[in-house]
Each structure stands twice: as structure tokens, then as C-alpha cells.
Length: 268
Ligand SMILES: NC(=O)c1ccc[n+]([C@@H]2O[C@H](COP(=O)([O-])OP(=O)(O)OC[C@H]3O[C@@H](n4cnc5c(N)ncnc54)[C@H](OP(=O)(O)O)[C@@H]3O)[C@@H](O)[C@H]2O)c1
Image 1: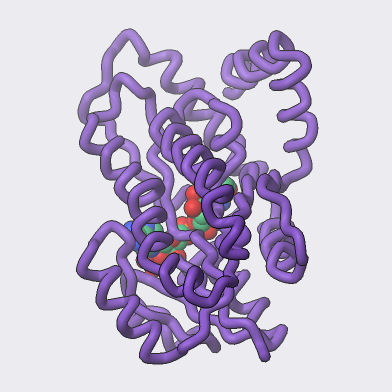
Image 2 (image 1 turned 180 degrees about the vertical axis):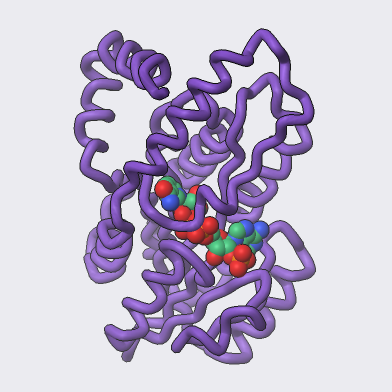
């Protein structure tokens, strides 16, 4: 029987590419968007309405999902966005909203679907985290914190789900070409002049990362492989530099720190 795969945030970026690829490969793909009416005629897979920030939207979505299918094999928690900016200048409510989507939203969708996976005694949850769930670059404090939080949550949860035969994996991409930058949120209302010159450099370093981003195929292939593997790994960093970055962080922390400092100093 072909697997049913649910992908949150399938209107753009990784989610859209993954949904198209899996649909083409013969999987039963269901994607989500906050505005499916904007995209549904342009995609070959089913696109349902879901705002992961909104409890009533999650409830309505779950009802619609199980009116369409009795079977769910894989949940890909992909929906998310990025807050950029100097931490002290970023209002707390902007940081809270980041957690509402990337952390709480992801958990709420997972919790809503877990009873179905437990009943089946089978399932797979793949969550798109980020390399910044494993390291912490400047100018991305809230985004980094939200991805560290989701990493920690699933790191623990996977053991609780093991005896239900529910597999849990994280995917940790570096910068890839999607609409993440276009959809990112930053605020200039609370700028502190002490940061003026540093802010310019830090923003330039973030922009440089996005400008030099890789094509998203590697992320899509990694998730596809995880779906087709019997024993998927928990942590799956993706991107040309991930091996070096994580090696330096673990085994040469001084070099790691100075390379981050240097990347900001030389960004412009
Ligand atoms: N691109 C990168 O370099 C990179 C690197 C590491 C990790 N990531 C992660 O990859 C995931 C996908 O991002 P992307 O790069 O593909 O960016 P993207 O092109 O901006 O796509 C983001 C998707 O998330 C959905 N979304 C955003 N907020 C949502 C909400 N509150 N409720 C439901 N859906 C929501 C959007 O759908 P609608 O707007 O249609 O609702 C859209 O389909 C994110 O979790 C991101 O943090 C990206």
C-alpha cells in the first residue's frame, strides 16, 4: 500500500519541492498552507488549510485530514519562518511569535496526530529543524532558540515513542535557496545606536549566507531517504559545510568561535 505523507508548509520552499517529488514518486501526499486557495490549482497534490499557530485551525484541519484518509504514515513538520535581528533590539513579542510557530505550532500538530500513530503502532515524524538548532550564529537569536528548543523536545520525545514503533528524525539544513529570507521578520523600531556598526555587519553576514545558499535538492533527497529507510537516524545535518561546522564546534571550539567572529567582521 502506498504511504500517506503529510507535509506542513507545502506552498513554498522545501515543503513544495518535497511534496511534488513524493507525489511524482507515487506517494499519497497531503500538503498544508494557511492560504490553500492561493496555491491549490498550481499543485498536483491535495493542499489543506492549516495555520499551526491557531488551535482551532489545527482542529479543523485534523477533521478534514481524517475525512480524506484513514491512514497516515509520515508527518513532515516543515512549516516555519525566521526572525532575524540583534537580540536586544528584538521585541519580546516578536520572539514569542517565533516560538509560537516554530516550537509550539510544531508540537501542537505533532500532539494532535500522535494518537493516530499510537493506534496504528506505526508512524514517522520528520521535523525540519536547522543547523542553527545545533549551533548559534549572531543576528538569529530567536530563530536559533526556537530551533534548539524543537531539537531538545524531539530528542527526548523519540524515546517515549520508540515502543509504539514511531520513528523520529530531525533534518538540520544550512542555508538553502527557498523563500525563507523573503518571509523573514525583523524590526527596526527599537534600534539601539550602540549596535549601529555591528548590526550592519551582522545583517551582512546573514545576507551573505542566504546569497550563497545551496539548491534545496539535498534537503528534499535527505527527507525522501529518511522516509524510505527502515532505521532512520535522529539527527540529519544537510549542506556542504555541515560536517566541518559541527566538527569544529565539538573538537576545536576556539577555531569555531573565531570563524564565526571573523565571518561577521569580514561580511561587508
Ligand atoms: N531555507 C533555508 O535555508 C532553511 C535552513 C534551515 C531550516 N529551514 C527550515 O525549513 C522550513 C521550511 O522553510 P523554507 O526554507 O522552505 O521557507 P519558505 O519557502 O518560506 O516556506 C515556509 C512554509 O511554511 C509555511 N508556514 C509558515 N508559517 C506557517 C504557519 N504559522 N502555519 C502554517 N504554515 C506556515 C508557509 O506556508 P503558507 O505561508 O502558505 O501558510 C510555507 O509553505 C522552516 O521550518 C525553516 O525554518 C530553512
